[in-house]
Image (spheres, rainbow, N blue to C red):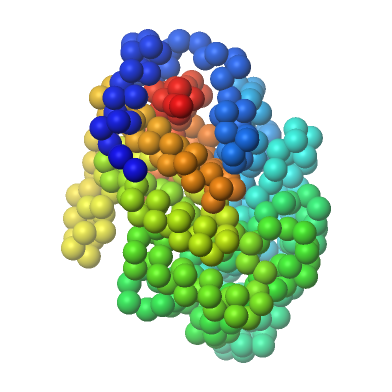
Length: 375
């Protein structure tokens, strides 16, 4: 597949046809819809944060309903939010999001039941009074959490991100965590088994980032093989596409999609955005430049039109890749609604970002037009 030149030529042509405003000042065609364009191939979804629908303006709600066929809760179903203390469940925000989705015919993704990072799990899970919890206690707590949450939404949530980010980025196979230390590697299989018991009809997903890259892709294939040997009901793999303009690993994404097709598994592009501010320096050389980087805000005055055009080009090429491999794609979910709501405005430091298809006023950007205009 040819990447780069073809998509830039296409994006440039679309931008010329769309008019001069990179911010999307022209009113959008009311019939232009992501969900309608791609419905024959895969669902296009969006992550929503805060309270739904109260925290969204009328224009934002209209954008959600017009453009997307599915929703993912950004935070309110994570264990730290839904059960911050043992036995104390907070379902209010999750209930409201599910009710909103069902009222408007949107598919819901439950995100996420077990996050394999210590800081993303309530501390009480791993404690028994003033001493560490036993393996049996940790597994029983995980079982209770999964059964309580999944059973509540049985028949209402079609897909669950069951385990999140269990693979390590470097030499270990699995990410070091208290889940791994106390419960052992089998916590992953158990999570899927208990989610399946709570809702046998739900599609169960393993979700992670960088799994398109060769080293982590091999770990993912190993995990799939091991889960299948145990008869675990793994239904799909989620890839977190938090990529950057000019650094999109197109060929690696293509290789992952082909590998998952060979495994007979669907891929969910679970968290898509395409940032325009490079983030690599934050982690380079052990993070020695973080203090200086944290003081920078390179695009505080706005995103240059040329950069928006490159973003549009690369978004269009991504979707061309997805369409070309649509047999392997079940869903593509943008990680939040528009630039003003993106998590990248505060990660890994506070700065203005422009990673999505709609600007801070919820107007379409060149990337939106490029995707809708692609053949």
